[in-house]
Image 1 (cartoon, rainbow, N blue to C red):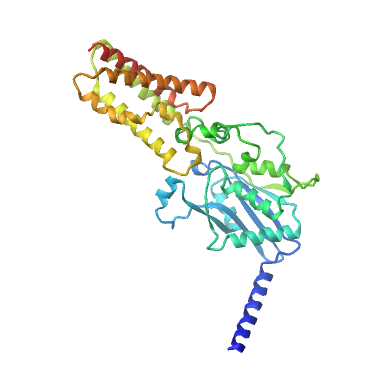
Image 2 (cartoon, rainbow, N blue to C red):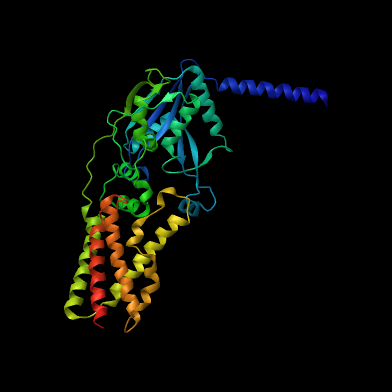
Length: 391
């Protein structure tokens, strides 16, 4: 037994030493940060960040990136909606990484880092350990724990927090919402959905470090970063590996939120005008409006209180998408409504006024596509109060 134990121990040590040597970077190794430009869909509109480990002597050229979906996770869509979904660190051969983003015509920039041999090895060892099956998963958070912030965190670990991230020359203070929307067309459904789902918490000013939740800002801050109290730059050299080819995109105005909701608003205003002239009530319109605004309000309420998403809190879209509307749809089936229901509609008018005030003073910024709909709702509620008061 003793001989077998010693033999096992000897083999274990030999394997461990061999494995350690296999992962030992040569003095010629380079570690760089790759910044990928935005894509065409909402989920890749903010770009991507990754590490590249290049060691010609050891025939290594791989990339590590954070933010890969774990489709094997149980209850994937439910956890995604709840903000409880674990994401993965990915590992890819650089040639494949390049081919993928070249195919999708997305710019790739590289920043070779000015790290010591010890720091390079520490960073590489960290990524290897992080990629192990038991360590790959992490709880994703869009603003504070995404593919870009992970790059900053790993650099801080490898350098023992000696890197100083200085403000870029073109730095401007901005809110989280502004930083997001600067990457989007404000009159797009993606932008509309973000403004609808995310609350006033993202309308506060982001700190300079908070700006680095976006890959393009990781690039900017790394370009200006220094090591310790010296003026020695973190980035040794930077260059563009692949430059996006110019493409023409057709106008999407006819399918945009402002146009579609504008048409709906005109239809509501037209029906309201006809009802006012004919002293009648188009009940199906009010049933539809109360039902839809109530359902949207319920979803917003669930995103606020029933999920772990931090960005969905304090959402004042509830001032127009009032969830209680669901409980009062039945009033339109009655021949005559009570005075209390008229007061309720007056409350809806007041809430729309409060929403406007919140928008003006900057408590929360709302989607521009909502403007025609809010005007139509205001006019409809005014008409309802007038109509029911005459009964």
